[in-house]
Amino acid sequence: MARSPRRDLLAGLTVAIVALPLALGFGVSSGLGAEAGLATAVVAGALAALFGGSNLQVSGPTGAMTVVLVPIVARYGPGGVLTVGLMAGVLLIGLAVLRAGQYMRYVPAPVVEGFTLGIACVIGLQQIPNALGVEKPEGEKVVLVAWRAFVEFVAFPNWTAIGLSVGVAVVMLAGARWKPTVPFSIVAVIAATVIAQLFHLDATAPIGALPAGLPAPSLAFLDVSAFGSLLAPAVAVAALAALESLLSATVADGMTVGQQHDPDKELFGQGVANLAAPLFGGVPATAAIARTAVNVRTGASSRLAALTHAAVLAVIVFAAAPLVSKVPLAALAGVLLATAIRMVEVGSLRAMAKATRSDAVVLVLTAAATLILDLVYAVIIGLVVAGALALKAVASQARMEQVDFRPDLPGEHSDEEHALLAEHIVAYRIDGPLFFAGAHRFLLELSEVADVKVVILRMARVTTLDATGALVLKDAVEKLHRRGIAVMTSGIRPGQRQALDAVGALELLRLEGREYATTPEAIAGARKHLEQAGLLPRTHHRPHRIRKAAR
Image (cartoon, rainbow, N blue to C red; front, side, top):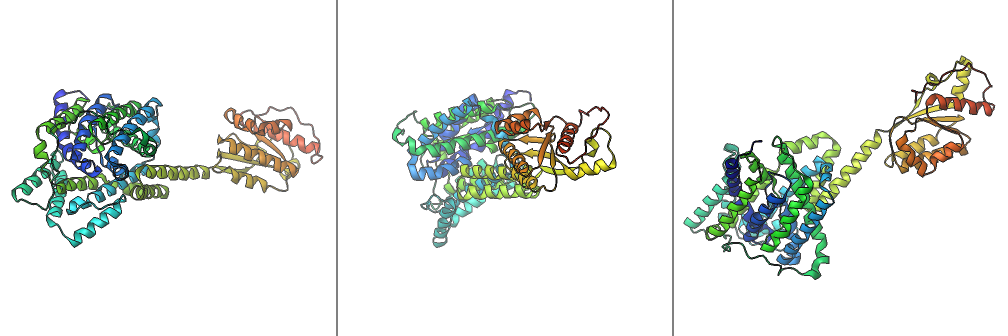
């Protein structure tokens, strides 16, 4: 993508217009006020653009972060939120130093989709009090708070507030379909503000007075004694900031040609942004997928666009604070309701639900956990369930099948000798992974072998072998040995010897001389064992070449 300062400046201006009502709304929703959202958008937006790992990323307050902050504000107050942001910044820088950004690629798509769906639901429910024009009820659980607000609205209806919020949401949604390049969010908010002022709609509470500029940086909020109790919330905020920022950067890369973000540098940039934002009264920040997408679509090609977005918002803070203070809270609620609706990609959800039953389960569980618990627990639950289902799927691919050993039988043999060998020898080929998720199934199958004297295990097609698989193999050999059945192995790969050697399985096989490189050698060993046991007549065959390629 060719760099164009003019296009970057225009993209930054457009993003700032889109970001203004979102910054105000998310600041109000977090519980710290609109000024906190603006401070975050300016300070964190600029620093993340300077130090982050993506040329196109736009950072600031987001709905997902607001979801995490609401219970923190309720429990620890505004000072606790600022402290949590500071601690999260340190943790993010630590993740960058540990080069943890590369692990984002292991988050499954159903977890991301379920996470996004859950966030959209929570953001929408958070707007219910302001959209209905009622005081926000007490409580941390968003579903309960929304229900209490609805009950209060039924008792004392405020149709003016709901009319403004629904009107703003409809204008945004319809306008986005009609002309996607026009920032209808700011158009709708300005229209709602003008209507409220012209018709003196006292039933719609405004944002209220805003400071004409950013406050001086301060650490007055810091309470070192609270670090212990705030560590868990700080980990949650840092984890969310890392997840959403790296996801947003990946989305931005996919929308362009030639752009590639540095995940560890992006974590560092978000860490610096979150260290600085609380000093100016800002809430914890993360990259914003919607604003980043607007930035890319309007032609941004460098960090100049994101810096311009922060600069424009700073000018608004300094020059237009009295005007912004008159914006009705119901109008901001409408903006966030429309944002929540646009976050839900019905096509993606339908595709995930139809892909496999496991994907559908992971998606629904992650979304439900996001709504009922919190975002970090939701991601953990989604990852654990997805991992368990993936292990089950991988383990089910493993096979142990009885195979005909006669094609690999060395030398020439009569039909009578073939029959004698087949009577006393059985060969199994193991395909796929032999690890903790499914190894015990093989132990049960091997333990049921009966009426033979030799079992040959062909292991050349074993793709993975861990300590559990090695122990299972050793136990099977010992159990068969106690029943008088000898076990021969062939084709053990060099990479699998360490696990087998660690648990003593190789030593057991070597002591009895029953580990062979190829299947023909193992069959020859089995025949010799039968001859020594007197179960097969000793015969002298013409010299032959063992086929080394066979396993």
